[in-house]
Length: 59
Image (cartoon, rainbow, N blue to C red; front, side, top):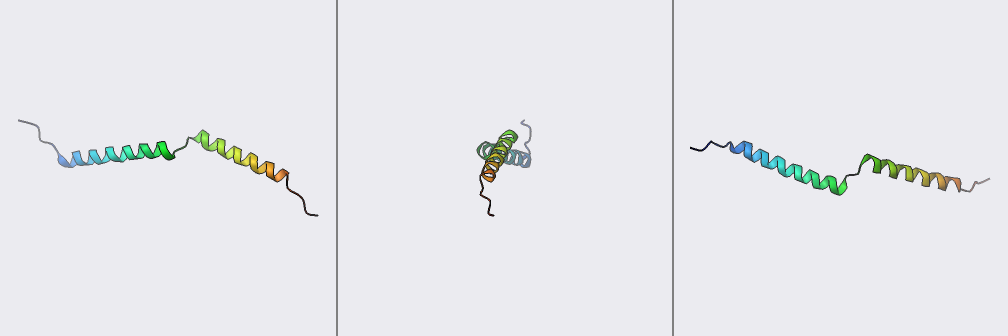
C-alpha cells in the first residue's frame, strides 16, 4: 500500500517553487550588484563635479 500524500503540503511546496522561480527571473532582469550601484553612483558624482566646475559665476 502506498504512503498517503498530504495535498496541502504538496500545493504549498509547488507555490513556493513558483514564487522562487519568479524571484530568480526578476533578480536576473532587474537586480544589480552592490559594486554596480557604487560604480554608477561614483560616475554620477564625477559628472556632477565636472559640470559644477564649468559653471559661470554671475557677478
